[in-house]
Image (cartoon, rainbow, N blue to C red):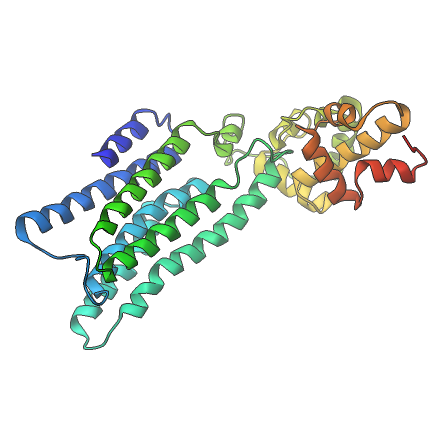
Length: 332
């Protein structure tokens, strides 16, 4: 009931958001699968997963793999909207029915091979996580308002859920089933709340981005000079919310070409490019206004917080702001 209600809630407030639709599909599939399993156990006494068995059966592991595949739908779509189309998702699921058939017809134990299935999905997800981080740095000038740790929390919850499922199958304590159900209810409620109410960086960007398929002019040598003149004059990077697509005010390129332009011309991501300018601005401010504190400068040079300023300054210069200013001859 909770899964079906959550799916309805996400679909009702999807606003064209593929991530919410993906989580709604996952919740619906989970609810339907649970209904089938519970119905089979209660009405037909089918022990798909029976607590207290001495060994983990191949059937139980296939069912667990199916639940795992459902829970992987959301993070794959959230990390790269539009990537997980139906055929890619079906391709990820394909090993399960193949393993189920082989486990039935072959006289060998395939449980170890079945257990590798969720690990393969996890490996694919880790690859997407790295791409997600690079994408964020290529489009935003600050990571403070982007929750990049949600995927780590979600993966930890998946690992705990998978481990508890296998433990239940070999445990002699049926009460652990109730404990796992409570944990899964928490996982579902937590993720639904995040999908509905947490900021989505993809949506932030797409709301200001034109169609990626439109015609664009090829990058030429004048673009770099045009961009740097605009940056020196307007200093748009002093705005903490400065984004890659804001460059379209002076460069007639779409988001993909803008990202490629920054990567190629400056050898870094947009995030690094902007923050290096902010650090240079901070150094200039301290030179011109020696009485300004670190907190004053961090607020004026485009960083969202003093903590972000300290962290970025140390990463780019190898010193804290106070150490750098001391080396410049300022002992205050």
